[in-house]
Image 1: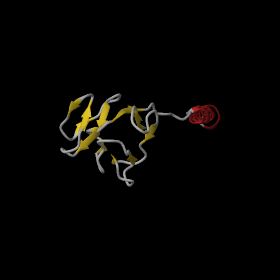
Image 2 (image 1 turned 180 degrees about the horizontal axis):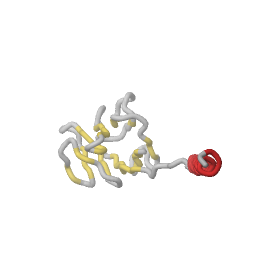
Image 3 (image 1 turned 45 degrees about the horizontal axis):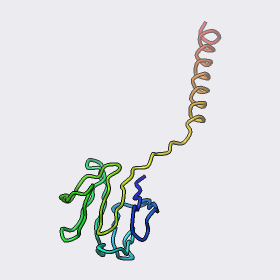
Image 4 (image 1 turned 180 degrees about the vertical axis):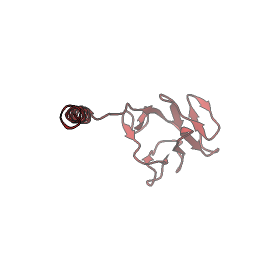
Length: 130
């Protein structure tokens, strides 16, 4: 799961979770994350996810967007913990740990299946084939 932690500005201290990709960040109400702070454009930047590239950020050249305090060339691959500056707002890009459901039921069913298969083979060897 991808999260953006808002470090400063009007929504400081909140976390936003990406639910659909690509997602846009900007001043527009239609943006996935709407920020009304100074220096944020209507459509400031967009984050996409690809199987080869991973998470990439693209911004228009006229928008002031920095990653870890440096100007970047669009598209740029994001890494866990990168700080994105969009105008006066700083956001931290975070890959949250994935949750794995328990596999106990599957494992039990697998072992029961193996035990039944062994019992069936022993039955064939000692009672049916002699």
